[in-house]
Amino acid sequence: MLFATALLAFTAAAQEPAVDSADAAARKKWQASYKAIAESITMRHGQQPLKLIDQPLRFYTNPVRSNDQHGAIFLWTESGRPAVIASIWSAMNRQNPSVRFVTHEWHSLLTDSDVTAARDDQPLWTSGEKGVAWERLDSAAAPAASRAGRLVQMRSIARGYIVTIKTDGESDLRLLEQPLFRYPDGTAGALDGAIFDFAMTTDPELLLLLEARETNEKPAWHIAFARFGNKAMTVKEGERTVFSCEQGQPGFSDGKYYLRWRAEEMPASPDP
View 1: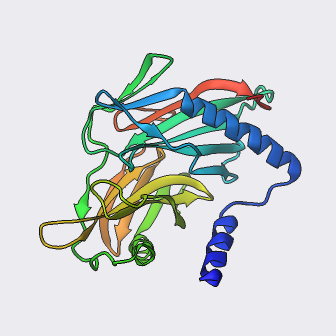
View 2: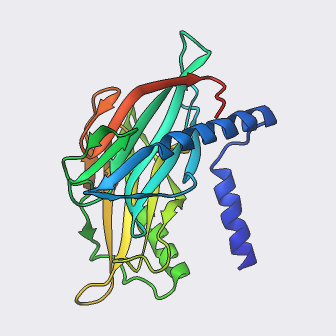
View 3: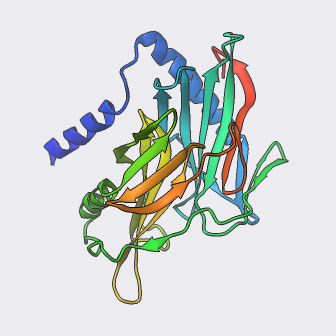
């Protein structure tokens, strides 16, 4: 058990590049700034406010892109289950290095269309469509009895998918096997569940959601996918395509996936 715990810690640490003390100080400031933005946004399902998890799921960087992009991932939940996931991220302004452009990006993870966002009492977004479509995984073994055993199963299921993204060419995204989010014990309507991501470095581009649910016959796994970037992507299980999305409009998207590129500007060295 101690070895397994140490291995998980090592794996999680390996997903993030090392940073020096100056970068760490800047990262801490940006983490606080991104969190303040997330906290200023009210997400609702119908009239019911959703609960923002206190800490970001991940602070990420994307050195593959040339504009010094970094951001943080946030999650709003409903009765413990994922409801809306968001990325608040920024990139440098090449014409004015003293400021950075901040982008707002999120996706409904609910199965109806009545999801909204507001900031300072001003409406920002109405999803207007179902966030995700769940499917039962009849080919998967029944959920294990233990929480640890179910995590092993979920990782194994996630490894069965290959995700490609079209940027300048076509390349595979990397599955990060440490879940972005794991359902807490006692979550209503689910025995267990998690959100996994396929990433460019540590920047999530596509989400894989898994839930273990009670059914009339026996507990079973269910799966759903959600884009988390505006590039064209394809998910395959062997030769079979199970999910795909087309290239979105640069810098803008509405509906279940919301993107506002350069939604605001902030100083390059923020003072939260």
